Length: 394
Image (cartoon, one colour):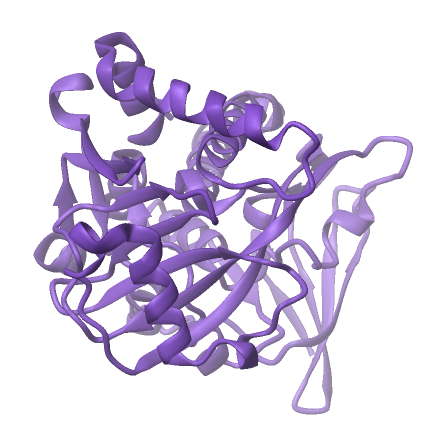
């Protein structure tokens, strides 16, 4: 069976769903192919801190209704070190800017519902997705669904299929450059239906490892702790997790943590990864297919949104005016912002985590505390942090 569309999209994460929805709002047709089931995609627990640029993109996509009602606007964050909590004011430091707490799972649900409303759901459980004809002006996608072979004829292909997806593999090795740093620890995360420790996030630099008090709503908390990559979730009972978390936050602050059964528990490795360029002829990549950042700076989902901002602008201009300049400049514009976010996440990770097996660990620790002290006591340093945390302009 053969289908026709203007843009074929691989992957139904936030990047693919958002691109398809914005294109739809502007009268451009697309089809999304997704190898997993809808329930699998819908159930993935990921990021929850949105920059204003990302909020603007969801508004443009006409899916921000629930976000506006349920999202929690934050105008500051907490930084804890030496058992003392300090606050960085994002609002006054950055001219009224803020971030919004609203989980990626909820964004995915909102976008899925928008697709269902327009009777164009992604094609879930699309197996053996292949890309053909990238070097020509008539690319196509092929896949198997319910045992039947399908082909999608399109003008462009966009890979939003993640780090392990097929899209990036279609870039010639002579063209593609990959930059990667793997960190020597992971994040152990727990989601629980308990009130948050604070109405704002608290990033904690502790001598035994990083900890983060986050949230998804006024009744649901998300906590993270730095852990060894050799550990498994099975080694962390709920009791062990809560005891260790409270210890890292210290008696004065940690005793305010409300504990309860975990709804979800997982360990995520940390890496910095960038592939460039983000275009090869009629094939584009975006989101995790193009770059990954440590979650410390809350940039992963927001970078995917900024990719889609630049890419959708290019497609809209191309189909409205026949102008390809936006598409030609997509890779350069997106990567310019990506590298700045990679830098911020790398810097913030080094500032807040304990790096094992370092010959200069005592010196490193002293330097971390000195820089944190400077950060919270210098207006210029706080303003720079706030500018990056709330997100550089798209």
